[in-house]
Image (tube, rainbow, N blue to C red):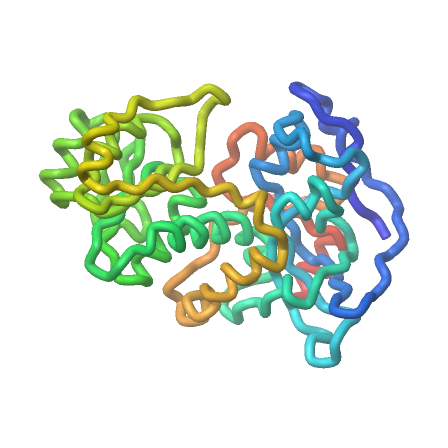
Length: 329
């Protein structure tokens, strides 16, 4: 089978040399596993950053790719022929072989049925964004009627957080740096409009929880939180990014600080988070992210990675078994 192997990493590495399409034996079925014909896989920011040497635990020669959607061709009878999707952490393309291949062996507990309202390409691109959002929401335990602020609301993860929060009955506030509508946000605030804390308090009063997808101005979000507020961090623009913390105010308001790092969640754990979202996909409350209009084959893998590395806002999808097979579903 054809697959994409990560041969080398480092800042400024030539992607055409770092990512090589190779021929490997097709994986063999074992007890408790399925063999999936991969029809769609996506390139995440973490995938691109891996080529730049951002993850020292990466095993040289590993097959890349975290998110997938495909057809079960071997495995338990009840799963054969099903279209399934999922994602993983560092077990997918960092310390273990990933899914950017024509075929992949996965635990039966790592695959989920594709929602009927979502295309194969969309399902192959929504694993990491929705996993990250689901982990964040599990940590803050938002309740119906509470106010949730999402910094970086027009990003893929921010959008997913807002959609889950709306599904759970929260009032949602999207923080953005450019004007325009924000899907799933009840209130939109432009961070460049002035005193952010004042604007938030005038618009919604005290804030119950903040999910920071940006990592800039985090101290302002701490100040905006009300009693028993929760803050989730999931981004840092630089390795030494930091923010000042008024400790007395923090503990007197009984605040809680969380972080999200989905690399620690293997494919089975990832599926357990995503499984809870399936009803929301089926009833249309949760919708897939935007897909870049160009879908690549394995031969275009370097171009796909480069597109992500230059900041493409849409999800970049690769069809490991070709565009015709993907289009047929």
